[in-house]
Length: 593
Image 1 (cartoon, rainbow, N blue to C red):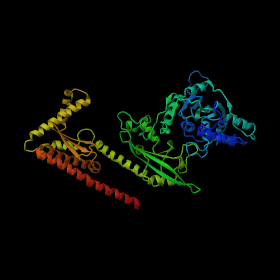
Image 2: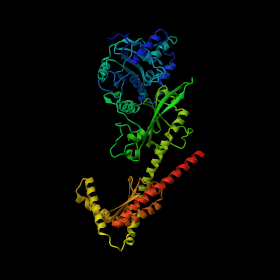
Image 3: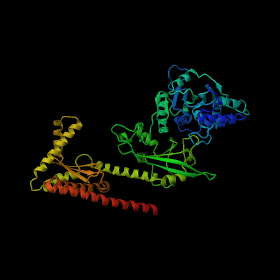
Image 4: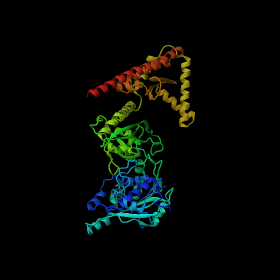
């Protein structure tokens, strides 16, 4: 065994613990708990949002202790078969461990060597005790540094209240830590912990109040913890392995853009689109006038109309359920998630509402612990209250502008979809009109042979492509395509055609198809904004132009194609100028308002 006085190879955290123990050993009240039964009962009601949020406090401690592996297990008492309801919740880690005196001290409220520490998660020394007693009346801690032995002590609310009843004048303190051999079932669990470094800490929470568990049954609680812990520690799971029983916790990103995270990809549905990230340094002044700097990193994501299975209806849909819960600005501290917040209406964000549609816009703000005062982090690290100064800074750094940009993108997509929805089943009105008017439009000049050959070649290519996509014989597809082109001689469709004209004409046999380009301003600013009647008129215009172009050959065809591309480029430019004028007008109105 290594000499405890030899500090040369000690973990820095363990060294700080031992310095603290030396300081407090001379104090008579070093191990005293506040003597008040109301305090003890009040600590049980500190207000953790869920069992997972309470267990997060213990995970925080393990990560700060340098653990590379953390495991959450359940005990079921003396029963030989697993009960539906766990009688113990056990958190094990392979961190640097604690000396006996520190184990005892850490079970006092406020007992920590990390007071006001800004390098990690803990600052107050409330987490372990408050979290444990929020759903159990007894917490026992076993710990061992690499150069020491297993020691343990405990905090039992029932015993403390009973002692208080007997003698309210007597100071109540945590029992002395003692050397111990791990109980068989605890030793077995620790031996299975990956990368066991012969040091670590084990927290056993028992006398569980079932009514205080978010999920009362073993399996539902296990699944709940896997998801919630995966969300809270998603940015840290590359450095630490967390398990719930034998199942590894996987990252779950509520913005759905983290590579490899759960639910990022669902077959037949779209993926979230990562928007450009943004970082900046914020400087705050302390009460003493000093300047403290901290980095803030912001991530964004956009989820289109095809992102949610079944349109996002129902709580059985994992993506919809998560986005409903995290509809707002997600706040992380040192990459560990804390809360989701909504900007106050009087902070310059008043005309942006986190409504149902806003579930399609993801925003995450991650700040360094040096900026705690600007986010007013709660003692339990599960809530924040962003300062007015920080809201103003986030607005200035473009968070509001990005939300508005995503809302605009959403509205544009909605308009595009409404066009297709308005048309309904069957033929569009413009297609019906063209079908009736076709005889009047036919030229007395014979159609050039090369035009007929081109139309037939296009039709044959279409048949072969459809046969390949459906993986069936060409002959089977041929009849279907022939009938479709014959019964629909004119057809309008919409596609994203980057860099193309505002419409593209094509002929398949006797069928003329006009594809309206969704990526052109003609679509987003005119066609998409038009009433159904005006849209029909625009479609008729394109059909007439397409018929003239497709019925020509040689130099005349080349002229039509060239002019269509020139008109499209010019139209895109002038509509861009119109868009800019409208945008500037909106800024002027907002400023004057």
